[in-house]
Image 1 (cartoon, rainbow, N blue to C red):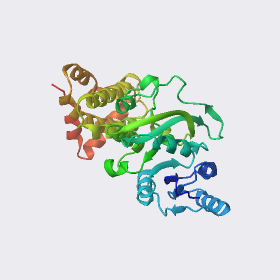
Image 2 (image 1 turned 180 degrees about the horizontal axis):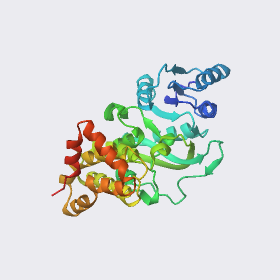
Image 3 (image 1 turned 45 degrees about the vertical axis):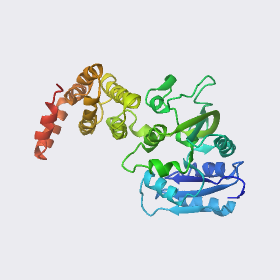
Length: 352
C-alpha cells in the first residue's frame, strides 16, 4: 500500500476461509481506503475453494505491496489473528473477515478521531450496516440516530443495552496496537474470541463510538454465530468467556453474574436444549463453569442460582422435551465409558 510518513501506520489483517465469492469486495474496500498509510496482511486459513488463487490474482492485478500467508492446514481464526499481530507494526490495528466490507473513509475517520483522544482510549468502534450473501442491504444502520453509547461499556456488552444485542461489532473496530501488550493476544481456546477481547479491553480501558456507518457486516448461514446461536454449544462458549472474569469485583462481577443467569434462564425458558444431542455434555460443562459464582453472590442471587444453576434441573428440562429412550441410552453410554458415577454425582448435586 502507499505510505505517507506524516500519517500513523495502520495494520489491517484480512483473514480468509472459503470466502472466494466475497473476498475481492473485501480487499477492494481496503485498497480504496482514503487513508494511504496501511500495512496489509492477508492470511488464508487453508480454504477448500479457489480463495488462494483469487487472492494471488488480486494482488498481481492491483500490484499491491502486502504480505500474503497461505496456510497448508486449517489453524482456526485465533491462531491467524495472533500471527497477524506478531507481523503487524502499525500504531493502529484492525482485523477483518474476507466477507465483510469497509466503507472508503473508515480508516481515515477513525484515525483522525483516535488522534484526538487521550491515551487511555484503546478501542474505537462505529455503526454498521448488514448485507446478505448477494450484497443486498438488509439494514441501513444497526444503531438508530438516538443511540447513546454507554459510559460503562463492560456492563453494557453483557446487558442488552438499550435493547441491542451487540454494542461493539468486530468489523467496525480500530485498536491501538499497544493494547495487546497489556491484555495479551487472542485466546485460542475460545470460539467467541471477539466477545472476550471486547470485554477484556473495556474492563480496563476507555472505548469510544462513532455513530457513522463505517462497515458492512455480511450475514451468512455459515457464520459462526448462525451455526450455534440457539444451541447448548453457544451457551457453553459464552460460559467459557465469562469464567475468565471470576476475579472481578463490584459492578463488573455483578454484570457478569447477571449475564450468566440470564443465559441459563434462556436455556430453560425458551427450550433451547430440545434438539441438540451434545447438550448433555454442554450442560455439564456450563454447570461446572458456573458453580464458582455461587459463593460470590448475595442472598437474592443465591435464590436465583438455586432455581436455575442446578444441572439436574437443566437436564430434566431437556429430557422432558426429547425422547426419554435417547436420554436413557446416553446414560448407559456414560456407564460403559466408566464416567456414570461422576455423571450421577453431578445429577444429584443440590446447592445448600
